[in-house]
Amino acid sequence: MTSTALPAPDPSAHRRMRGVPDSYAELSDYYDLLMTSGYYDYDTYAQALLSRIGMHRDVLELGVGTGLVADRLLARGPKDLRLTGIDHTDSMLAQARDRLGERVRLSREDVLDLSLPSAFDVAYSIGGVWNIVQDGEKSWLSSHLMEEEDNEAALANLAAAIRPSGSLLLSVQGPHRRSDRTLPGDLAYTQHVEVDPEGRHTKDYFIEGQGMVLAHQRLRFRLFPQETADRLLQHCGFRFQESDDLLWHYVRR
Ligand SMILES: C[S@@+](CC[C@H](N)C(=O)[O-])C[C@H]1O[C@@H](n2cnc3c(N)ncnc32)[C@H](O)[C@@H]1O
Image (cartoon, rainbow, N blue to C red; front, top):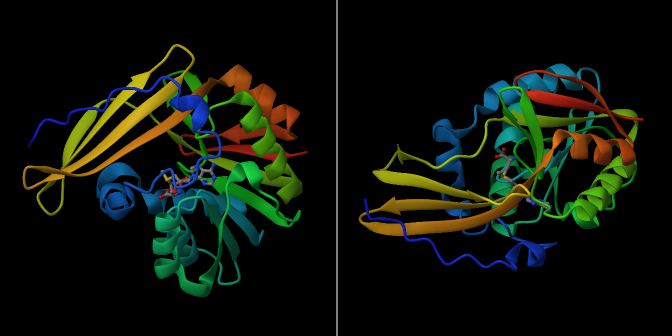
């Protein structure tokens, strides 16, 4: 494998990322391969989501990506589930359309500009726009939106789209660390992570094969301490309900 040289950091990039679309464009060709070869267990997430969705039918996925979660949900869930998925990366959505066809309403939207009718019983994000990072007793809200005020605006948009007493479900995952592993097809995956004191993460994904870097994706996200997250979520109308190893459950007041 070649050594993966990192581009020089750009200190102003965090601020510029506000509302930038297509955040996963460089990785999208390899996304499914990476995710389905040990990154996430989609069947387990789908089962956990379905147990919270219960009798509800109007469901929204935030950051639907290539449709891997939605696909598992439809395969395991009730036939009359009405699923909508939003995402701001065209090349991810194109794959979701191929995978899901007419079974899911897909829409190219950024959560910052989300404007949906108050029509959803449940919204969920599995490593999408938001998720929870857990490290032992400590937890953070991980967000693709770098600024607190952007999270507040997006969570307010989301609250407006969820019916009163509806649910927001966020997946739980471990901390982001440097790692590498092999992928099917004689490919190799490496991730580098840099963190600043305010929880801003710069994560570089590299896919390599035949001695070349085939894809490099630089992603930025921020981990907000649980107190900040609770304040933000409370302020936008979400009350913490319960959590387990897979999902955190908030209720729209
Ligand atoms: C790690 S992928 C997760 C996709 C899918 N949930 C899965 O588990 O495979 C994160 C997705 O969130 C989308 N995303 C990130 N920020 C977004 C934003 N502000 N608005 C809409 N989608 C966003 C990205 O384009 C990407 O497809």
